[in-house]
Length: 335
Image (cartoon, rainbow, N blue to C red; front, side, top):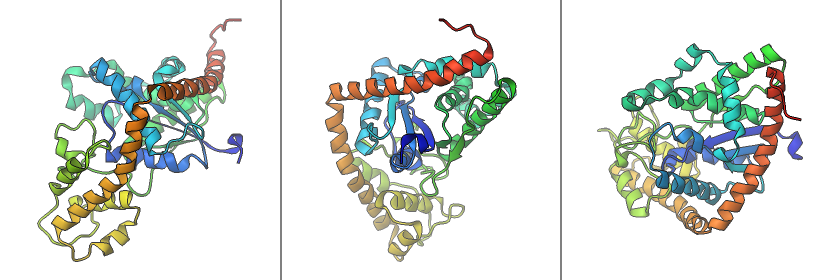
């Protein structure tokens, strides 16, 4: 299938810290699966990352580590457009124009802004408030039809769609209206200590979160200490058994089996053995990925080449959209 006949997808992950099991299950697993069927545009969202305070040296290292992990997991720059967000200035340029076509009330209703503001009340900056508009620019720049996201990001894609509709209505059709794609399995892996909340890489309790870079002993320790319940039955029931249901989701994702098959496999199994086997499935999945990631991270020249080629390819596509937008809003373009 030729690229021009494929539907286009855009998605990105922030390099604010090491990627987690939730990052893989909720996004990256789907990115990999979609590369052959779709025209995929993927990036490391470094511009989104600076809404929180980061040490510059750590931030630079994390950006390269995330890129290396993308590649180690199976994101193929020969099959998709892969780049670092700040390497394509059109993201920031379009975001300003979209700001001027976004209503304050729309942005104020974003759930993540409210949650992040509570988490760090001393750093409620304008960038944090404006984050969803930059995300809309990311998506609309590439005329993406589909956006694979976790459930918590669906509202941001809907905002991008609303902004696009408003701009199209005001200036004539310009943007494709994006649709969110929510994975059926593993869309949300929750914390091991708090199985009713998202597994977040910004989590203070490190036992709550398993990172893709965690060594085997750390992975096993975290799973052995995972919160379950006082029952003895291993079955999927998010309302009554959130801890067990979360572990079944993890096992299903990383062992490559269905939830129902996992329930049958662990029927009559004790909780301690169940948690141990879930941890082992994750360790075995991560073993070759971590080895490849280590090799890639050491090859700085290759990473630089991937970034350069990807940014050039992305910039060509972004410029097409941005030039059209500039003309429609009435900017005088240079000859």
